[in-house]
Image (cartoon, rainbow, N blue to C red; front, side, top):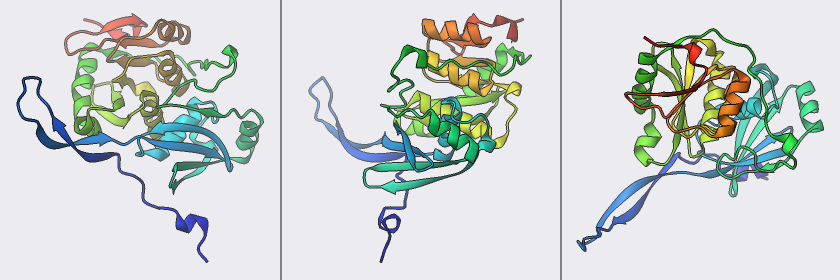
Length: 279
């Protein structure tokens, strides 16, 4: 007799799918038939100790990284060593991402568990009180110094790391750049929070010293992105778009350097300019 697990699909969905479409010109020219790659968005149910915790809409790639990063930024774990294993179960209704925690950590998590149901990487969906808003603190105050040429190089180098973005034009990216501006790790997702969580998970799993580089994100910098950076221990975050007022407030409170509206020729420094080496 086959088990339920055996009867479920076992192959993960692709991160993109190609679909037929028509390009219609306003000028009245005949429509042009073609195909286009779309980013796949799938429900991912994070499950801890057989207990469902959250449903996030995410791109089904780098899910092990996602499990680690999400667990850290949600405050479920404090380090990679508290996660024993992860596995993905593919079902007809979506994906279940099982995360096995160390026994003591699992007990603590279940004691304060909150169920959330998010949209695409929603950062605060499901909380019941304002006091539950995330409020991380930078774990240390790294003395990292970043040069402006390194920021410019990272922005340029990031393009080559956005494989899914180049294919679909529909996903966000988060990257960790070395102090020379080279991109060491990048992750992509339809949700900007998910992309950063995946990056954080990858850095956790590899044991990367985040003091020796900085974060670059292709999205706007909301307060959740700052909170995630602080929980990771990163001191410098560079965003393509502008920050929100609360993101700036949290960056100041956490002692982060927040650079945004980053372009090839200029970058706007909102706080923490002392970490930048300006000629």
